[in-house]
Amino acid sequence: MTIEDLERFGANTEEGISRCMGNRDFYLKLVKIMPKDRNFGVLYDAIARNDLDAAFEASHSLKGALGNLSLTPLFTAVQEITELLRARTQTDYSPLVEKIRKLHKELEALCD
Image (cartoon, rainbow, N blue to C red):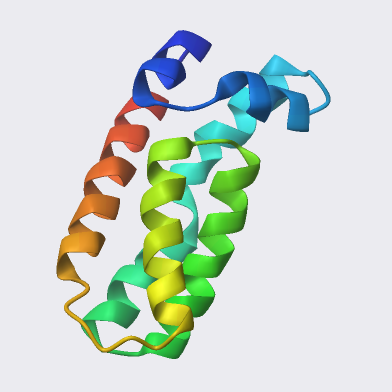
């Protein structure tokens, strides 16, 4: 995975690297572990069980981590579901979950 790969994904690498004190290697290391964050699985499972509280906690945690790394496409999708969950909106979350899964898999493929 390279900075250029992440930029093609849509990440704002300049911003993410600046949050890592300008250390590109540290930034890439953090990005590489992001797809393994257990909160992705927690979010998917909680939505499947209609446990909006657990889904909110997982999505909120993911939102913070993704935002700090400036992984913009995935951050935006997670932010959207987080705000709906914060309001405990009763809706069909499956389109948003599928969008997050797709972007999660794309990031995972970049990190392999």
